[in-house]
Amino acid sequence: MKLEKVNRILWIVAITILLMFPVFTRPAFAEDTNDEEVGVEWIEDYSAYNEAHDDSLEPLDKIDDNVEGFYDTLYSECGWTKRFNMYEGSAWESDFEKYSVGGYDHIWIDTVDFAYFSGHGYYDHFPFNVDADNNDYDWRVHYTEVSWGDKDLEWIVIASCLVLNAAPDGYPNVINRWGWPVFHGLHAILGFHSVAVDKLMDGPFAIYPSPGEMFVHTMIGDVTGDEEKIGESWELMTDEWQGQGHPYGDIWGACLGQVKRVRVAPREFHNYIGYNDYLRGYGYVMDDMDPPHAIAYHKWLCEPWT
Image (cartoon, rainbow, N blue to C red; front, side, top):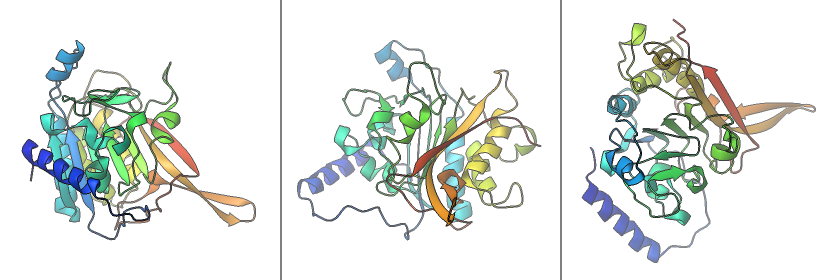
């Protein structure tokens, strides 16, 4: 069920009251034996952002189908619990930000196992159409405001242009932007190195019109005949989604993952990488790590494989 803005405000007020009378316990990761939960947020209309910043971000009219396809398919095909679907003016930057900068990720994005955001993006942030935190980075989530996985979040899609760009001029590289500052139990971020196109599936996979829907069907084995790892599923889906049906040139997908190094012989180690997890129930899922031993980055040119 889509939550109304008034419900959000009441919920935040209730949590604020509870925080005034805390119960002192040892900090720990949220346990993952409960129902698997999914939460999504998306923005198509950036008119308020444009007015406030004298900008010209274009409206995006396919975002809802993309994100809600992911949300609905995890529920219908895998039995996941729908936690929240926030969109347009109900999608707030503070949902993604840590408490120390005025955020509420501890009651929103970090309370689900898998999150999916879609909207505009840039190297160091992704913007919103509401100013919800009044800090140094109004209207947007900046990588310095983020600490994901210290409660429950394992995987997040940021289906936005440029957020996972490897090494843009004038910015830290992607591992020092969205890697070390962000990964605190998080397993993987999936997104794009380049720009991406606001479109639905076409070609042979138009049977899954929503890219988010095809992403889930790839993870659970309906597309290739085998259950696929989360990062590989994102790569296979974006190859078909962004590799054809538009005139915008080369588009590159990307993912970041936590790394755990395990000694398998006296002089031999094996690296477990978070984007090589399977959807829980379909294969191996690595443990949360804070901090990880390393951060891995992978990018690919989106080209149809059929």
